Image 1 (cartoon, rainbow, N blue to C red):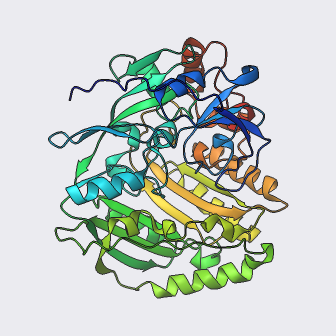
Image 2: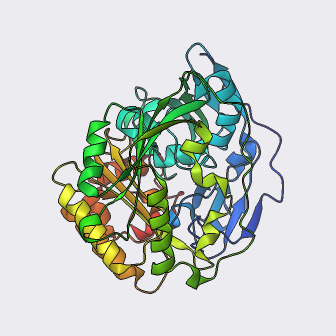
Length: 455
């Protein structure tokens, strides 16, 4: 597919920079920063000269849960208006798009044409630029890998104002530093992603109640060949019921469903802080577990409903009140990581402050990037309301993860220590070497990068 790079647009608007207070999706607030919202490549290039020499951070939809999408006191380039589809080749499935295109856009435009993003995060509102920056994965990671495996090339606006077309062959180190690189190597201006063909707009999904952690892990192993597999886990269950939950296994359906676009609802107010407590969460978990069938039953489910269940409530983060929440997501190696998985669940259940949103997945492939999260093993993710004592809980979870040879997902993180990061991400020195080559003056930074010692 031969595609010309995007041509520069009109001259930058004089009001490009404005002060803005930003939050993460976990409602983590940052000190005010300056923000630019470019609509054309020329405006994006102009944004490199941030007022006062402030460090820059490209930000997509702001769906990172912690401080990966925040740049306190710095400058943020909002890319959501850079959302044009530039070219598509149905023979190869290659799509060329700007970084502000979202997975919701891809689903709406390409699923009726028989194509789907091969790897997708848990919300359709993530942008392609954000997906590349975090090398996102989905419920099919054990077979399909993460998004970086499906990127043919990208155009990257570097700190010196030049644009480089980067492929795995032209500059392998920069390619691997940018995939999962948290937006710290430059600003993506165009992404070439290979979509996959699908037979319909639906999946055949089997749901089954699982009594404990051993049965859950056996279920993942038995369904290793299934295209999609994911589990909801009751993070408050203890004793003989530790790790109980609901396992969902799915594959493409030859027959589709009537095209009935979902009508998402809004949560019009913040729930009071006391609404989510051990009793209310335990009651919800019990009800959710019992509603699942004891024996697997199959139904046809739209991709949108299966891939993005939380998108049915547009403001679901308001469930946690104004204080927000933190998410802990780690991946632990198979076999040797299983005792650690049990220890994590025991620690969380004993604390009694986990929420009803807890997910267990089996991952099967290494991520492409130097800072990619994915690796073969079990991924555990759960939301924890932001309350006093969170720091001690997350420190305990970090210790268990490090000792087991696992790692924490940086897209969701707000608590990881520099020491924990260094232990979990051994390619960080190589990543820093690439940054020093393409950004010697440190033009790009974020709250997370400074917290973890990346500058």
